Length: 299
Image (cartoon, rainbow, N blue to C red; front, side, top):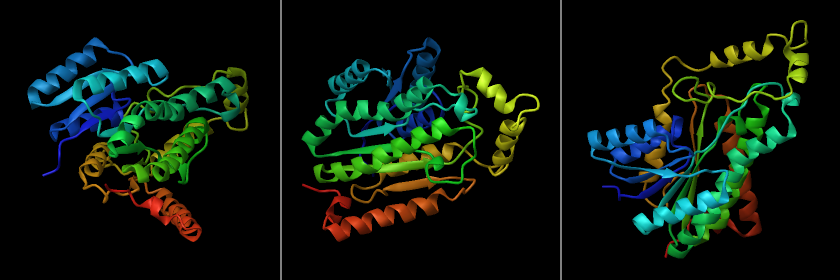
């Protein structure tokens, strides 16, 4: 039987985060669901879920764009549970439109939400994990990092690539503290998440219209590409598979967890590229005499 963990999932109001939080709670884990807004309806939904399933899913105010909020959330978890075993970096937000039409500030916002948020939480929680010489970081990445991706989602793709790069570095720099890392790589799911429904749009409408307005070189292409790439997604693709993969990773024995796992129904090639990249990285570290960084240290 798998041990029961204290788990924090960021961005747990909807999508992958909400599904994984509930799936893990059903497995008997104590799950702190990170929420930017303590919406009354969402809190009621969590309370109802706990009553119906006899689970321990705890709403946690966690504004991932605020250093003080993230630090306070870690302090709150430790006050309730004394330790934190697992952090699932799930918080993220998508945008859609011609790249040039996004302002510099919008790109910075994407980086803040999708990349810096993970570092805020790591800075707050890793001293605790390093002291215990134990812990697990699960990073929800994207097949866009290494896969065959379409145009018009560039700020999000670039930010996810940045988060993935941080995850790869943290893996090596934490292994000798006994802390494991796993990058979970979902493909594009058009159903079951709010990614597309809540996607941001470029603020420079003038430039955007020069790309996609009537008679423009890319007129109609933005929507057409979305439809064409969406057709690669099988009709039976189920977003719950991502949540189940996160559960499987967390409940796997210490030292046996994969460094990266792909859940991509469209099979866009990301897994092939990732395997090659990770192999080259390991080979180079081995040549340099630091292969041990790929093995999590045990006390």
